[in-house]
Image 1 (tube, one colour):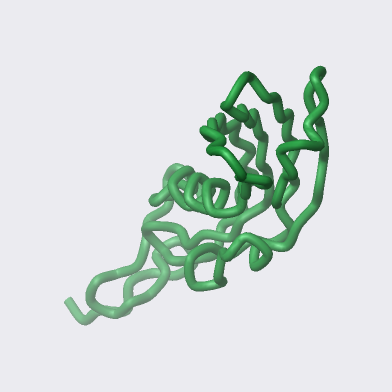
Image 2 (cartoon, one colour):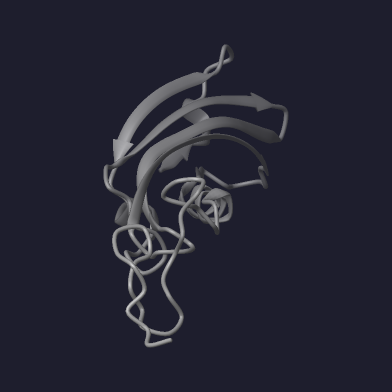
Length: 136
């Protein structure tokens, strides 16, 4: 999302967009977004600095850390960015900063339920739905 610096009015600029993750460089290998990203931003220019207060939300699919079933989570985070404007710079681009923050704020460990029993290390059975098939 490129913002033309000269189009930022004195009172600031607000916008709301729905974008596909690939638009900001998020690949399916990095993150499984079930729905497009909802981005809200308030852009202010203060002297030679542009301040961007953003909120990004989506629904993501992650694997349970114990049984590997897909778990869907809603995630909505607020990020603040500032950009120093150099002479001649006409635009700022929020894409890479938003991409990095989304990746950093996705939980690295989720459970399908708090008491998930996981997989048997011997037979690989899902202990939430079946008994262990290992020979004792």
